[in-house]
Image (cartoon, rainbow, N blue to C red; front, side, top):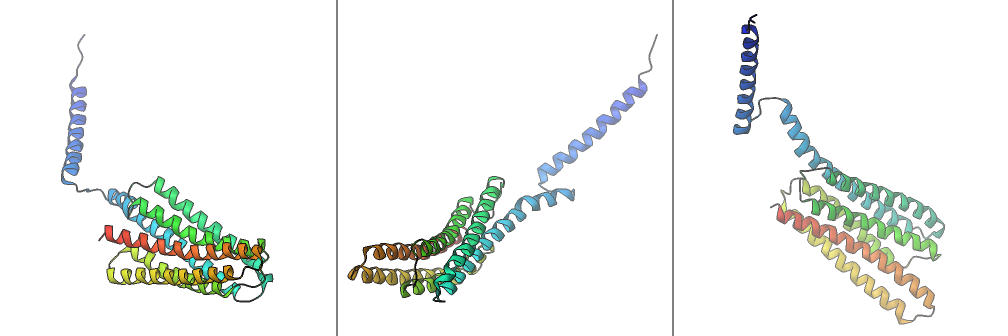
Length: 253
């Protein structure tokens, strides 16, 4: 008994022709590097442009968080009211938690992002350095409570003022990472941060010399030595952020 294979052969031939045409279109796309489908450019945008925006947004949010923490600290220690220190510590703890959350978000996104706008090591370094600024301020607030500080030394207020100014400069520097177009302004701001840190160092060393000059109460000496170290270290972390921004700009120039 015979079978008529003409319809089946016709179907196979048509399917083969469609497959060949699809293969040719794919080869043409791969060879030219040009996509004719409107869906692929959207995916490319999601992989390249969106992660860049997100990382810059997160770094700017972290820097803004540090700036607000510095402003709060500076404002509260000038009230002359130690009864406010407990509330200051509570609010500073909130800033610290916000900074930690932002840092964790940056790290998590780095672990899941293939393409980053700048080197991932620089993003990570910036995130941790900015977070360290808030950690140092929080540490000072904790010591105000633990050591039952009644009066804040003038040197701490002077360094605190420098810290606020330095964090303000960081806001501009971190924002500049989006395009890095104004190299001169970036360099000027980095030099400004370096100058502020040197000023804080001088105040710190003068304050140390003062408390060691006539140490009537060794316990008080230890307390203030720790507090001065922490608040001065916060300005060191500010300078570190500025340095990382500077090296990042140089690598991408």
